[in-house]
Image (cartoon, rainbow, N blue to C red; front, side, top):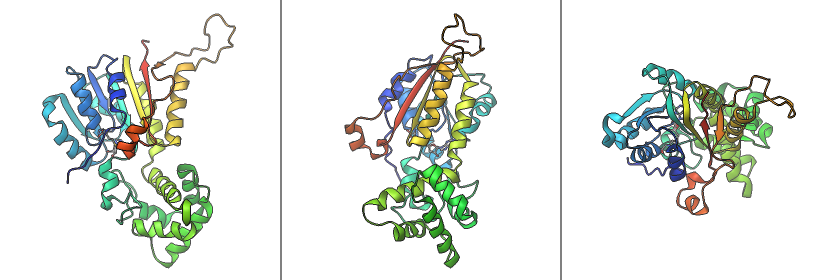
Length: 309
Ligand code: SAH
């Protein structure tokens, strides 16, 4: 099946990456290869290393990126260990890193992956279906307290506790096996105007937990520091406030980390400024882009340049 996947904020992302040396770009979430193809077209001398934890995505990226031949190297792996993948290829550093967080349209659209409350499928939600615990297994084994915490912390769901209790009561009657089983629990508790937004928050919370998404992001950001060459560009596209908060705080800490009193003539705390922000204010898609590509709706792009040591 051919998936229509429209890369989010593509032009802005590519132009900002083009400010760097553009030799080796690491696309930590190559997905269906949309951003990667645009980068390879814009930077004709660049090579690209593409990571993804989803083998279906990698197969799709391989087809999309075939015209670029040996300029592309695809690896099945997580950006949470991006430095290890870079070093394994014999590279000390890269000249750009792109992280496009969230789901690809392939993942959202395939009912069999269990990401969507709009389609009936197995309650899986793993980005890498070969590893880890599925959403069904998580919801079968976690305590009501653990489920509530996930819904609250990762879904920002105000009804986390009653929903968690309802999930536990339901699974005592029969296990939750499908996306419809989970959606059914939510819909018995919340109807009317709040139904869809609650479904979205519950599915997000479970998905973020099942994939360890915030831990991965924290690790990826930290490890990126070790492989970004001076002058290189780091671009991160996030899709919900929890992700964006991590990215914003990370960049801010690297830009303004000096803790010296403001009247000190020279920095004495040993802080090294590592980044210059290229997006003083985060970039967001225009209403036209959102109308054409619903996946862009909540996107936030932050980009920084690694400064010379
Ligand atoms: N920019 C891509 C779309 C990326 S969608 C394009 O234009 O085509 C996000 C992708 O990130 C998905 O394919 C998902 O499987 C992948 N992903 C999620 N978590 C990951 C991780 N920890 N490491 C690597 N890839 C990950």
